[in-house]
Image (cartoon, rainbow, N blue to C red; front, top):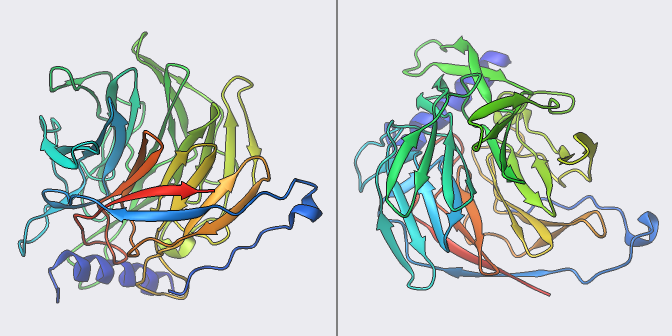
Length: 359
Protein backbone atom coordinates (compact mmCIF):
# COMPACT_ATOMS: atom_id res chain seq x y z
CA UNK A 1 0.00 0.00 0.00
CA UNK A 2 2.89 2.32 0.85
CA UNK A 3 4.54 1.56 -2.48
CA UNK A 4 1.30 2.22 -4.40
CA UNK A 5 0.89 5.56 -2.69
CA UNK A 6 4.46 6.59 -3.51
CA UNK A 7 4.08 5.44 -7.09
CA UNK A 8 0.81 7.33 -7.48
CA UNK A 9 2.49 10.55 -6.39
CA UNK A 10 5.35 10.03 -8.84
CA UNK A 11 2.87 9.48 -11.66
CA UNK A 12 1.09 12.69 -10.67
CA UNK A 13 4.37 14.59 -10.88
CA UNK A 14 5.26 13.13 -14.27
CA UNK A 15 1.84 13.75 -15.81
CA UNK A 16 1.58 17.29 -14.47
CA UNK A 17 5.10 18.21 -15.58
CA UNK A 18 4.37 17.65 -19.25
CA UNK A 19 6.68 14.60 -19.42
CA UNK A 20 3.53 12.56 -20.02
CA UNK A 21 0.31 13.65 -21.72
CA UNK A 22 0.01 17.13 -21.07
CA UNK A 23 -15.88 20.45 -6.78
CA UNK A 24 -17.41 19.56 -4.64
CA UNK A 25 -16.33 21.90 -1.84
CA UNK A 26 -15.32 20.33 1.44
CA UNK A 27 -17.99 20.66 4.12
CA UNK A 28 -17.15 22.74 7.17
CA UNK A 29 -17.16 21.02 10.55
CA UNK A 30 -17.77 23.92 12.86
CA UNK A 31 -19.36 24.18 16.26
CA UNK A 32 -22.29 26.52 16.48
CA UNK A 33 -21.77 29.90 18.10
CA UNK A 34 -24.35 28.98 20.68
CA UNK A 35 -22.47 25.81 21.61
CA UNK A 36 -19.10 27.55 21.91
CA UNK A 37 -20.45 30.57 23.71
CA UNK A 38 -18.99 32.97 21.14
CA UNK A 39 -21.10 35.71 19.58
CA UNK A 40 -22.71 35.07 16.22
CA UNK A 41 -21.04 37.15 13.52
CA UNK A 42 -22.02 37.51 9.86
CA UNK A 43 -20.43 34.95 7.57
CA UNK A 44 -18.04 36.82 5.27
CA UNK A 45 -18.28 36.67 1.48
CA UNK A 46 -15.36 36.59 -0.92
CA UNK A 47 -15.15 38.58 -4.15
CA UNK A 48 -12.60 37.34 -6.71
CA UNK A 49 -11.15 39.37 -9.58
CA UNK A 50 -8.64 38.15 -12.18
CA UNK A 51 -5.58 40.36 -12.55
CA UNK A 52 -2.66 40.53 -14.98
CA UNK A 53 -1.04 37.07 -15.32
CA UNK A 54 2.52 36.22 -14.36
CA UNK A 55 5.05 36.54 -17.20
CA UNK A 56 5.78 32.80 -16.89
CA UNK A 57 3.85 29.88 -15.41
CA UNK A 58 5.03 29.08 -11.89
CA UNK A 59 4.32 26.75 -8.97
CA UNK A 60 5.80 25.80 -5.58
CA UNK A 61 6.77 29.44 -5.14
CA UNK A 62 7.66 31.66 -2.21
CA UNK A 63 5.44 34.75 -1.96
CA UNK A 64 5.53 37.89 0.21
CA UNK A 65 4.69 41.60 -0.05
CA UNK A 66 7.26 44.39 0.32
CA UNK A 67 6.76 48.09 -0.34
CA UNK A 68 3.30 47.64 -1.82
CA UNK A 69 4.45 45.00 -4.28
CA UNK A 70 3.86 41.24 -4.35
CA UNK A 71 7.05 39.21 -4.89
CA UNK A 72 7.14 35.68 -6.33
CA UNK A 73 10.40 33.84 -5.67
CA UNK A 74 11.82 30.63 -7.15
CA UNK A 75 9.71 27.52 -7.67
CA UNK A 76 8.94 25.58 -10.82
CA UNK A 77 8.77 27.55 -14.07
CA UNK A 78 7.27 26.54 -17.40
CA UNK A 79 7.28 28.56 -20.62
CA UNK A 80 4.72 27.74 -23.28
CA UNK A 81 4.90 24.02 -24.13
CA UNK A 82 8.48 23.57 -22.94
CA UNK A 83 9.36 21.04 -20.26
CA UNK A 84 9.31 22.63 -16.81
CA UNK A 85 12.37 23.90 -15.00
CA UNK A 86 11.94 22.21 -11.63
CA UNK A 87 13.92 24.78 -9.64
CA UNK A 88 14.34 28.31 -10.93
CA UNK A 89 16.09 31.54 -9.95
CA UNK A 90 13.28 33.70 -11.34
CA UNK A 91 11.91 36.58 -9.28
CA UNK A 92 8.95 38.71 -10.31
CA UNK A 93 6.93 41.37 -8.54
CA UNK A 94 3.40 42.63 -9.07
CA UNK A 95 2.23 46.23 -8.65
CA UNK A 96 -1.53 46.13 -7.93
CA UNK A 97 -1.90 49.86 -8.56
CA UNK A 98 -0.69 49.50 -12.15
CA UNK A 99 -1.73 45.85 -12.57
CA UNK A 100 1.76 45.16 -13.95
CA UNK A 101 4.53 42.63 -13.42
CA UNK A 102 8.26 43.32 -13.32
CA UNK A 103 11.37 41.10 -13.36
CA UNK A 104 14.10 41.41 -10.72
CA UNK A 105 17.56 40.16 -9.83
CA UNK A 106 17.45 36.36 -9.77
CA UNK A 107 17.97 34.18 -6.74
CA UNK A 108 21.64 33.23 -6.36
CA UNK A 109 20.67 29.56 -6.73
CA UNK A 110 17.75 27.73 -8.41
CA UNK A 111 15.30 26.71 -5.67
CA UNK A 112 11.81 25.32 -5.40
CA UNK A 113 9.60 25.12 -2.28
CA UNK A 114 11.61 28.00 -0.82
CA UNK A 115 10.31 29.67 2.38
CA UNK A 116 9.83 33.43 2.01
CA UNK A 117 8.80 36.28 4.34
CA UNK A 118 9.10 40.06 4.44
CA UNK A 119 10.69 41.99 7.30
CA UNK A 120 11.89 45.58 7.61
CA UNK A 121 11.39 46.40 3.94
CA UNK A 122 13.40 43.38 2.80
CA UNK A 123 12.62 39.92 1.51
CA UNK A 124 14.10 36.82 3.17
CA UNK A 125 14.34 33.38 1.54
CA UNK A 126 15.20 30.13 3.35
CA UNK A 127 15.98 26.61 2.18
CA UNK A 128 14.22 24.87 -0.68
CA UNK A 129 14.88 21.89 -2.93
CA UNK A 130 17.03 21.78 -6.06
CA UNK A 131 15.50 18.62 -7.61
CA UNK A 132 12.17 16.79 -7.87
CA UNK A 133 10.45 15.23 -5.94
CA UNK A 134 11.44 16.99 -2.68
CA UNK A 135 15.07 16.05 -3.25
CA UNK A 136 18.26 17.83 -2.22
CA UNK A 137 17.04 20.20 0.51
CA UNK A 138 19.28 23.22 1.08
CA UNK A 139 20.55 25.25 4.03
CA UNK A 140 20.80 28.46 2.00
CA UNK A 141 19.50 31.75 3.38
CA UNK A 142 19.26 34.97 1.36
CA UNK A 143 18.03 38.53 1.78
CA UNK A 144 16.78 40.79 -1.03
CA UNK A 145 16.97 44.58 -0.94
CA UNK A 146 14.32 45.97 -3.34
CA UNK A 147 15.88 49.44 -3.32
CA UNK A 148 19.07 48.16 -4.93
CA UNK A 149 17.62 45.04 -6.59
CA UNK A 150 20.26 42.79 -5.11
CA UNK A 151 20.37 39.49 -3.18
CA UNK A 152 22.90 38.88 -0.41
CA UNK A 153 23.67 35.67 1.43
CA UNK A 154 23.61 35.44 5.21
CA UNK A 155 24.39 32.52 7.57
CA UNK A 156 23.04 29.14 6.51
CA UNK A 157 20.15 27.59 8.40
CA UNK A 158 21.11 25.07 11.08
CA UNK A 159 19.57 22.26 8.99
CA UNK A 160 18.89 21.68 5.28
CA UNK A 161 15.14 21.90 4.60
CA UNK A 162 12.58 22.49 1.89
CA UNK A 163 8.86 23.32 2.22
CA UNK A 164 9.65 25.31 5.34
CA UNK A 165 7.19 27.78 6.88
CA UNK A 166 8.50 31.29 7.60
CA UNK A 167 6.87 33.96 9.78
CA UNK A 168 8.14 37.47 10.59
CA UNK A 169 7.28 38.74 14.09
CA UNK A 170 8.83 41.46 16.27
CA UNK A 171 11.92 41.87 14.10
CA UNK A 172 12.71 38.16 13.88
CA UNK A 173 12.01 35.32 11.47
CA UNK A 174 10.57 32.03 12.70
CA UNK A 175 11.44 28.95 10.61
CA UNK A 176 8.84 26.24 11.17
CA UNK A 177 8.87 22.59 10.16
CA UNK A 178 9.84 21.52 6.67
CA UNK A 179 11.24 18.40 5.00
CA UNK A 180 14.83 17.17 5.33
CA UNK A 181 14.39 14.28 2.83
CA UNK A 182 16.72 12.00 4.79
CA UNK A 183 14.80 8.97 3.50
CA UNK A 184 14.80 8.39 -0.26
CA UNK A 185 12.48 6.00 -2.13
CA UNK A 186 12.72 5.26 -5.86
CA UNK A 187 9.72 3.26 -7.08
CA UNK A 188 10.55 0.69 -9.74
CA UNK A 189 10.35 2.12 -13.24
CA UNK A 190 10.09 5.71 -12.05
CA UNK A 191 12.32 8.51 -13.41
CA UNK A 192 12.12 10.23 -10.02
CA UNK A 193 13.19 9.53 -6.48
CA UNK A 194 11.04 10.70 -3.57
CA UNK A 195 12.44 12.53 -0.55
CA UNK A 196 10.79 11.92 2.84
CA UNK A 197 11.31 13.23 6.35
CA UNK A 198 9.11 15.94 7.87
CA UNK A 199 10.51 17.74 10.91
CA UNK A 200 9.23 19.60 13.99
CA UNK A 201 12.10 22.07 14.10
CA UNK A 202 11.57 25.71 15.06
CA UNK A 203 14.46 28.10 14.64
CA UNK A 204 14.40 31.87 15.03
CA UNK A 205 16.71 34.09 12.97
CA UNK A 206 17.60 37.58 14.22
CA UNK A 207 18.83 39.70 11.27
CA UNK A 208 20.33 42.30 13.61
CA UNK A 209 22.59 39.74 15.27
CA UNK A 210 22.87 37.46 12.26
CA UNK A 211 22.23 34.43 14.46
CA UNK A 212 19.79 31.53 14.85
CA UNK A 213 18.38 30.25 18.12
CA UNK A 214 16.29 27.15 18.79
CA UNK A 215 12.67 27.65 19.90
CA UNK A 216 9.80 25.40 21.01
CA UNK A 217 9.24 22.51 18.61
CA UNK A 218 6.08 22.24 16.55
CA UNK A 219 3.51 20.29 18.59
CA UNK A 220 3.01 16.54 18.16
CA UNK A 221 4.34 15.65 14.69
CA UNK A 222 6.68 16.94 12.03
CA UNK A 223 5.04 18.62 9.08
CA UNK A 224 5.82 20.42 5.84
CA UNK A 225 3.80 22.18 3.11
CA UNK A 226 1.90 23.92 5.96
CA UNK A 227 0.16 27.28 5.75
CA UNK A 228 1.85 29.90 7.95
CA UNK A 229 0.59 33.42 8.70
CA UNK A 230 0.84 36.03 11.47
CA UNK A 231 -2.37 37.40 12.99
CA UNK A 232 -2.21 39.92 15.85
CA UNK A 233 1.37 38.96 16.61
CA UNK A 234 0.55 35.24 16.85
CA UNK A 235 1.95 32.67 14.41
CA UNK A 236 -0.69 30.35 12.94
CA UNK A 237 0.46 27.05 11.42
CA UNK A 238 -2.35 25.42 9.45
CA UNK A 239 -2.64 22.02 7.78
CA UNK A 240 0.39 20.52 6.09
CA UNK A 241 1.45 16.89 5.74
CA UNK A 242 3.62 14.33 7.46
CA UNK A 243 4.64 12.52 4.25
CA UNK A 244 2.46 12.30 1.12
CA UNK A 245 -0.70 14.30 0.38
CA UNK A 246 -2.51 11.20 1.65
CA UNK A 247 -1.06 12.14 5.06
CA UNK A 248 -2.55 15.62 5.20
CA UNK A 249 -3.42 17.29 8.50
CA UNK A 250 -6.29 19.40 9.81
CA UNK A 251 -4.10 20.71 12.63
CA UNK A 252 -4.15 24.39 13.50
CA UNK A 253 -1.52 25.43 16.03
CA UNK A 254 -0.80 28.95 17.29
CA UNK A 255 2.52 30.16 18.70
CA UNK A 256 2.54 33.01 21.21
CA UNK A 257 5.86 34.70 20.54
CA UNK A 258 5.95 36.69 23.78
CA UNK A 259 4.99 33.78 26.03
CA UNK A 260 6.99 31.32 23.94
CA UNK A 261 4.36 28.61 23.95
CA UNK A 262 2.08 26.71 21.56
CA UNK A 263 -1.70 26.35 21.81
CA UNK A 264 -4.13 24.22 19.84
CA UNK A 265 -6.73 26.12 17.77
CA UNK A 266 -9.81 25.07 15.81
CA UNK A 267 -8.67 22.62 13.09
CA UNK A 268 -9.24 23.07 9.39
CA UNK A 269 -12.59 21.70 8.20
CA UNK A 270 -10.76 19.34 5.82
CA UNK A 271 -7.19 17.99 5.88
CA UNK A 272 -4.94 19.46 3.19
CA UNK A 273 -1.46 20.75 2.41
CA UNK A 274 0.31 23.08 -0.04
CA UNK A 275 -2.49 25.65 0.07
CA UNK A 276 -2.02 29.41 0.47
CA UNK A 277 -2.48 31.18 3.82
CA UNK A 278 -2.79 34.94 4.28
CA UNK A 279 -4.16 37.37 6.86
CA UNK A 280 -6.80 39.74 5.56
CA UNK A 281 -8.07 42.29 8.06
CA UNK A 282 -8.84 40.48 11.31
CA UNK A 283 -9.16 37.04 9.72
CA UNK A 284 -6.94 34.23 8.48
CA UNK A 285 -7.67 32.95 4.97
CA UNK A 286 -6.63 29.49 3.78
CA UNK A 287 -7.23 28.59 0.13
CA UNK A 288 -6.78 25.54 -2.09
CA UNK A 289 -4.32 22.72 -1.45
CA UNK A 290 -3.77 19.09 -2.37
CA UNK A 291 -5.06 16.43 -2.65
CA UNK A 292 -8.70 15.47 -2.35
CA UNK A 293 -9.13 12.22 -0.38
CA UNK A 294 -9.25 8.70 -1.77
CA UNK A 295 -6.24 8.77 -4.08
CA UNK A 296 -7.67 11.62 -6.14
CA UNK A 297 -5.47 13.73 -8.41
CA UNK A 298 -7.76 16.73 -7.83
CA UNK A 299 -6.69 19.81 -5.90
CA UNK A 300 -8.99 21.86 -3.67
CA UNK A 301 -10.78 25.03 -4.70
CA UNK A 302 -12.18 25.64 -1.22
CA UNK A 303 -11.51 28.91 0.59
CA UNK A 304 -12.08 29.00 4.32
CA UNK A 305 -11.71 31.91 6.73
CA UNK A 306 -10.81 31.72 10.42
CA UNK A 307 -12.10 34.39 12.80
CA UNK A 308 -10.26 34.38 16.14
CA UNK A 309 -13.20 36.12 17.81
CA UNK A 310 -15.47 33.11 17.23
CA UNK A 311 -12.69 30.55 16.82
CA UNK A 312 -14.55 29.22 13.79
CA UNK A 313 -13.75 28.54 10.13
CA UNK A 314 -16.32 29.66 7.56
CA UNK A 315 -16.37 28.87 3.86
CA UNK A 316 -16.37 31.79 1.42
CA UNK A 317 -16.56 31.94 -2.37
CA UNK A 318 -14.32 29.25 -3.89
CA UNK A 319 -11.21 29.93 -5.95
CA UNK A 320 -11.90 30.53 -9.65
CA UNK A 321 -9.89 27.33 -10.24
CA UNK A 322 -8.58 24.66 -7.90
CA UNK A 323 -4.83 24.66 -7.21
CA UNK A 324 -1.92 23.97 -4.87
CA UNK A 325 1.69 25.13 -4.65
CA UNK A 326 0.77 28.81 -4.85
CA UNK A 327 1.22 31.77 -2.51
CA UNK A 328 -0.60 34.81 -1.23
CA UNK A 329 0.04 38.19 0.40
CA UNK A 330 -2.04 41.16 1.51
CA UNK A 331 -1.66 44.66 0.08
CA UNK A 332 -3.95 47.58 1.00
CA UNK A 333 -6.79 45.42 2.26
CA UNK A 334 -6.78 42.97 -0.64
CA UNK A 335 -5.24 39.50 -0.83
CA UNK A 336 -3.41 38.45 -3.98
CA UNK A 337 -3.03 34.76 -4.85
CA UNK A 338 -0.55 33.85 -7.54
CA UNK A 339 0.82 30.84 -9.48
CA UNK A 340 0.16 27.23 -8.48
CA UNK A 341 -0.84 23.98 -10.15
CA UNK A 342 -4.38 22.79 -10.90
CA UNK A 343 -3.18 19.17 -10.55
CA UNK A 344 -1.71 17.29 -7.62
CA UNK A 345 2.03 16.69 -7.68
CA UNK A 346 3.15 19.11 -10.37
CA UNK A 347 2.19 21.55 -13.13
CA UNK A 348 2.16 25.35 -13.10
CA UNK A 349 0.01 28.37 -13.91
CA UNK A 350 0.32 32.12 -14.47
CA UNK A 351 -2.89 33.03 -12.66
CA UNK A 352 -3.12 36.12 -10.47
CA UNK A 353 -6.32 36.52 -8.47
CA UNK A 354 -7.39 39.29 -6.11
CA UNK A 355 -9.62 38.48 -3.14
CA UNK A 356 -11.69 41.01 -1.23
CA UNK A 357 -13.60 39.89 1.86
CA UNK A 358 -17.04 41.47 2.05
CA UNK A 359 -18.86 41.73 5.36
